[in-house]
Image (spheres, rainbow, N blue to C red):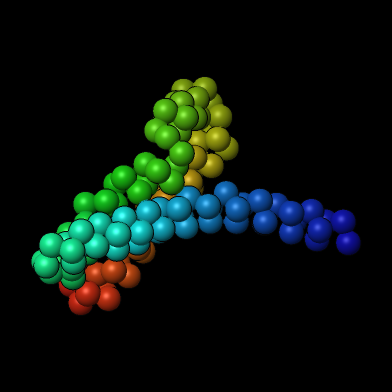
Length: 118
């Protein structure tokens, strides 16, 4: 039973490391776009157009927020590339990919809801 429990711990740790940046980027896109469009509602503009516009613009910032600051990630990528630490390179690449997928999923969801899929 030991290997199965050890494998479950590894799987939970990997899921935590990938779900956290995914959900963070997803939430930044959703929250930023929806709360940003509130200003448009208060000024009697079109909130659907504002949601579509903001969600497209905020995706890059959501990725930066989700990876927890660019310098730590860039340092880890550098040591992975030039220091020969392949596992660290793959780990940081997976975190960046999870953040990218989370930001795009938030954008896709909002674009689908406002019927402006892009």
